[in-house]
Image (cartoon, rainbow, N blue to C red; front, side, top):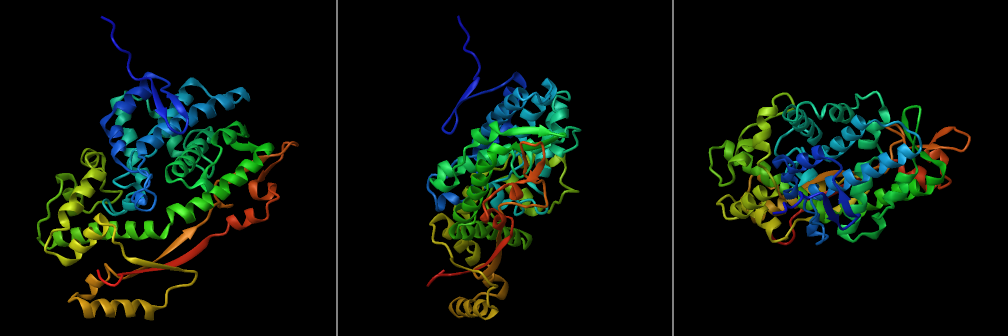
Length: 409
């Protein structure tokens, strides 16, 4: 009897067939903590705006691993030394870079475990897996933490033009249908090079860099900072906040044991240890959606209405302005709500609130995108470009919003 071979390729809608490079990567993908990423949405509640945006962190991680294979191949062809150990470290680091994301990704990053970033949790996962795999992830951890002597290895994983961004911009553009965000990831990768241990882009790739930065700006305004998406995410955060408040007051709420644990225990980076990883690994989008469906029938007016708003997509109204919101307008909306419902000041703030959004496509002062000129000189992408509006992209744009109920909550 012929035994079937283990899965060695993925069929990806973006890149086609993706090969798994070695047995270690195969085993990491098979880990339950990694398989959990199949149940973590890449773009939170953006599917309420773009119905096709149902792709997951699993899709993204596999795509990143594929692009990293391409990057290693390109750099080696240009006589950049990358050892087998470093190559495997790159694959592991990029594959696991988002393993610490909680339900709905960035939308709830600080709502379930306050003050703990997904990067910190990813590192804890990697350290735990490193023990289980007898130190096989040691190089990957050094690269992930930026402690490897070859700085360009870390830049491939985390910088302003890294493998992570090359995949998520192209992938999010594909699944949302927002063509302005589509970038030529493969073209950019072929322009990669290394000078003085740092990642650079060859001069002929400047136009691809310009398109990359413009696409990033468009995607933030049209997708990541879409006004409906902002409202939905804020409501999601408010649901967890209200649930925590009710639990702290002794009320009981039906939800998964893991979700209830994190709502009843306040943890930060100092108290969140590897011991909590097993509980965290049980959390995914299913826990949150199941809880929201259940909580919309609670007796608490605030929690019930917040949940039904998300489930039925009857969200708050939002206005975005270039200047700070007039406090009088905020107060007017609060008074209107107070007259209609018998709510306390703190309860009203769940339905009437303001906030700030920022968009900066490129930061000249942090991990610059460097262009390698024909004469060997390295310059910042802004200086190398003849696009005047590219300088504008380095300026932070700040906008202000107010959310409040429509005619009825």
